[in-house]
Length: 570
Image (cartoon, rainbow, N blue to C red):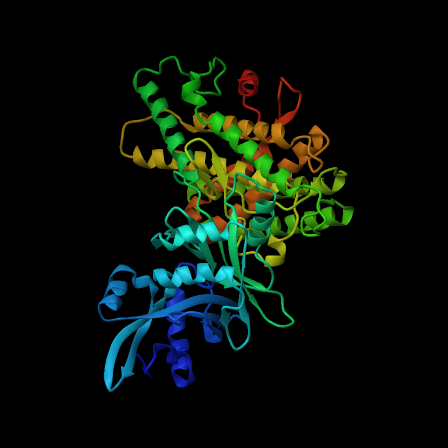
């Protein structure tokens, strides 16, 4: 227990400060946003403690340096405040994950028992961070200063937020977000490093360019030191009313689709044959293509995003760049190295896989030379496409569904990657591949769920061809929507062959990334990327749009030639 005299903030001075530092390892390892769980903490140190200079000092903001036995160190942000008596009891009961440790303040020979806890769970503290964005140098520490910045939307948004209640959002993994009614959302970045976070950088640009399909930036907080790049600590955006993310919406649509297939089978089939059968007739459009319009709209919104980010610019960070031979070669080498590591990991984990997954894995491993050669094709063809700033971590979970439209969020990039890599320019096909793989995941997650639900029931129809038909339909609609919007942009490939090549390579690279992730985090899910790899390796051709003559999709051509025609003609 920490004991201090007069004021709880004395916990950050002298010997009590060391006691606070001793509490931090246990608190950090229990926090879902702490990214160092695979390592062993060697020490924690309060590298800086910033205090509010303009209010009553109800909060301090700690920058925690975490060192590991395995080597290396990270810096984490932790706003802290104190609670006593009944308020302390409430925090311990309702938000136990926010409690850092016990604290006793001695005032006039009386002991006041309380707790030190994460200040984001305190409305006044959370709002103080928000309001500080409109003023500079509000928080000062021994090593640096917290500097706020704001857009023209700040005054109106903070006026609304001041009258709204705040709530910490659930489910976030690497950061913490606080919602202020229906006015604004503030995201506090937990692990920080020198350089502007891409979410702030891209947010400023999209807001300035008035991109309508992502939340507008309101303000930000950056930690500045002499002779060092500023670190992004937090930002605030407008709140976008929604019905959840596109992943949940997609799973709901898929579940309804499968339920209808099962209902048709229960009624004797209703004349519905599995998609790959020679006498296949397309089912009613409301059965198979409910999601098609949504996928097409999502493709359009993705194209509009790239159009906004790919504009000519005087800002070096956003000016489109050509794909030089040296860049392409370095990209190919990086992908092939990552592929080799992923397949080596798969080979080591073979004995631990289920029989079905092991059979798929062995087939993938047998085709390692082919896979590496397919990735290497990128360096054997000159590219007309340009590199632009992209989303960088694009999937259905990064999209909000409003009930009639989509809103693109979370431009932070993959948090595990270095900041410089997340701020780099990429081929726009990176985002397309991410979304296509996400749709494939959604289809096969649904298949796994249905099989688990019917495990002890009577035999049911083979749903694989049905979910694959759904996936191919959604994929094609997404790509058609994208190319309708951005197909003629300066950054887009100038030929059908180049479009097909780039999409093929990026999907393979994405599936290999997923393979490594699942082996390390969810080994029972490894069948999903394995299925994607096998699908791409078996046949990787584009489906031709019979109306425009454009190549609109990669992936295996269905066994029935008629099915390919029906899919793009609908």
